[in-house]
Length: 243
Image (tube, rainbow, N blue to C red; front, side):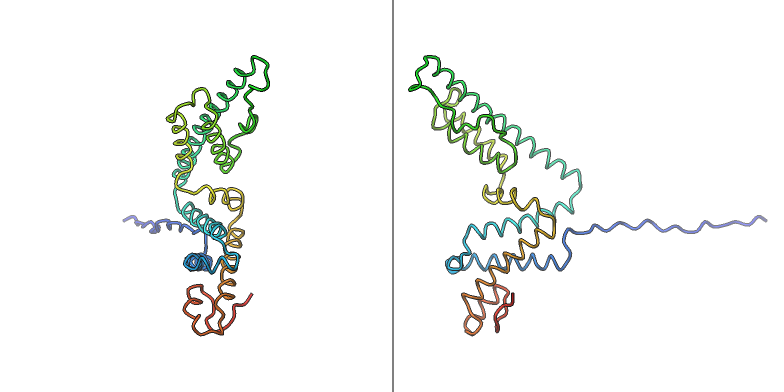
């Protein structure tokens, strides 16, 4: 009787683990930063005395939001990321096209008023960003859109003399901007998006420590009454904060 052999059992391939963008220690740093921002917002007047302004805290919060964005992106499917990028590019193209129409209308008005050769009645193109790439970056497009929309409102351009025409361009700007504030987005474009992970963490931890040192100065450890506040800032309750 022929022998039968049993094929060795093969184990199913292990499901690869998705590694997060930050390790646990770094996540702890981010959570502390979030707590410190909340504490600083709750004591805005005192923080102002130490030059920790609302605008400065906005920059801190923008860095923290960038860390959240990267963490989310690291766990998302690549197709979703591509779709989001495509949607943003489409919105940028629509906005840029509308802004170029404003520029064309300004050039039209310039030529129409230049035909008599009288410089006193000419329509200058100063401020219409002629020859400038409008969408060189996200922050540039946001700023250029605001500039051209303001000029179109003031100068009664051909094709943009009625409120709905300008409102339509403002709607395209709103679509492109989304829910993010212009200032935070400008900070992110110019500084944060260029940083690698460690560079981003350096910004966050530096700002967090600056806020904590401000709190250390405002509410000294020698005063027992300051301990509850010091705790909200994550600094030692019974001694001064180290460097």
